[in-house]
Amino acid sequence: MRRSLLMRLAWRQSLLRLVLFYAAAVAIGLLLHRLLEVLLVATTLVAVRSYWRLYRVSRFLDWRQQLHAVHGQGLWAALETLVYRRQTDNRARSRRLVRLLRAYRQAAATMPDGAIVVSRSENRLIWFNKSARRLLGLNYPHSLGTSLLATLPGPRIEQWLRSGNTDDPLMDVASPVDENLRLSLRLLRYSPEEWLVVVRDVTQLMRLEQVRRDFVANVSHELRTPLTVVHGYLDMMEPEDSPEWAPMVGEMRKQSQRMTQLVEDLLTLSRLESQQSLTEETVTMEPLLITLRREAEALSQGRHRIVIEDEARCDLFGADKELHSAFSNLVSNAIRYTPNEGSVTVRFSRTPDGGARLAVQDSGYGIPAQHLPRITERFYRVSTSRSRESGGTGLGLSIVKHVLSLHQGRLEVDSEVGRGSTFACVFGPERVRPRQS
Image (tube, rainbow, N blue to C red):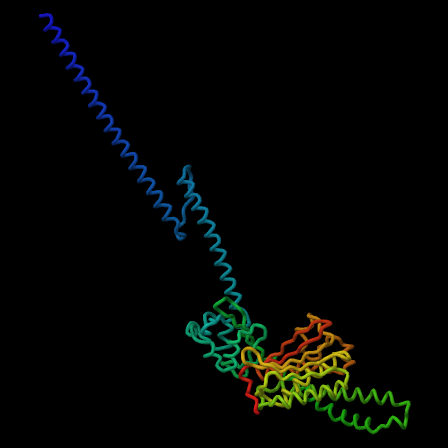
C-alpha cells in the first residue's frame, strides 16, 4: 500500500513538472513570437523611413527643386544639409552666370562693330549681333545656319577664310547692303571649332586714306617738274669754272637725285595702293636674275661679293615690272646696309608646298627684333643716320609689301644683329610656271 502510494505521488510530481515545463515553453514561445513581430515591425518602419529619406534626397538633388534647411542629427540629416548647401551654392553661381551672360549679350548688342560666330568647317553663321545685321543685312533667325560666303561672296573672302589669317584684317570689303559702305573683316580664334569675325565700318577711314593717296600723288607729280629743272641746271654747272663751288654743287646734285628718287618711290607706292589687280604674264626668271646681278654690281662698285643662286629652275606668273621693282629694292637695301667686303646672296628656290621663294641674304648690320614688325611701314627707319648715309628713301620695303600683296605672296624677314638679314619673297604654287627651255 505504501509503495503504491509513493508511486502515485511520484507520478503526480512528474506530471506537474511536465505541465509546468510545457506552460513555460508555451509562454516563452509566445514571448519570442511577440518579440519577432515587434522586431519585424520595427525593421520595416526603419526600412520605410530610410527609403523615404533616400527618395527625398534623390528628389531634391534635382536643382530645380530647392531643399529646405534641415535641423537634426544623424547621417541623413548631415547628407540633406550637404545637399542643401550645394544647391544653395549652385543656385547662387547660376544667378551670377546668368547676370554675366546678360551683360555680355548687352555689351555685344551695343558694340558699334559687328560680331559673327562662324563654324570653321562650313563657315556657317552660329550667332551675330545687332551691328552685324546692320552692316551685312543679316536677319534673325533666318540667317542662322547659312554660309558667310552667301552673304559676302567672292574668291577673296573664301581665300581669306581658308587661310585663317588672324594677324592682318581684310580691308576694303564692300557691304552687301550698300556698295559705298566699306568694311574691314578681322578673324579671331573663338574656339577650336569656331571663328569670331569682327566687322568694322571703315568707310570714313578709306575716304581719308584715298585723300592721303591723292595728296601724295598730286604733290609728287607737282614736285617732278621743279626737281627736273633744278637737276638740269645743276648738270649745266661745271665745277672747273669755279672750284670753290664744287663741293656745294656736288652736294646739291646728290640731294636733288635723292629727292627725285623719293618722288619716284612715292608715285610707285601710290600707284600700287590704288590698284586691286595687275596685268600678269609669265615672268622669265633667268634674265631677271641676271639683271639683278648687274644692278647689284653697279651699286656695289666692287665693294661686295655678289652671289646669284638659281635653284628653282622655274618661272613666275605675275607683273614683270612690279616684281622687278620689288626684287631690286631688296637687293639695293642689302647692298646699302652691308659693310665693305661683305656678301650679298640672291637665292631663287622652291618651297615644300610647290611654291617659289626668292631670298636676298646679306652679311650686314642686322635688325634688332623690336624693329621687325614695323620695317615695312612708310618712312620707318631702324637707324636714321645710317639710312641717310646710304641714300635710302624709307619706302622700299613698303613697295615690296604691296607688290607681294597684289601677287598673293608674303614677305618673310629673318635678321639678327651683327649676323645680317634675309628678306624672302614667298609665292604660292599657283604662281609657279615651268621654265621655258
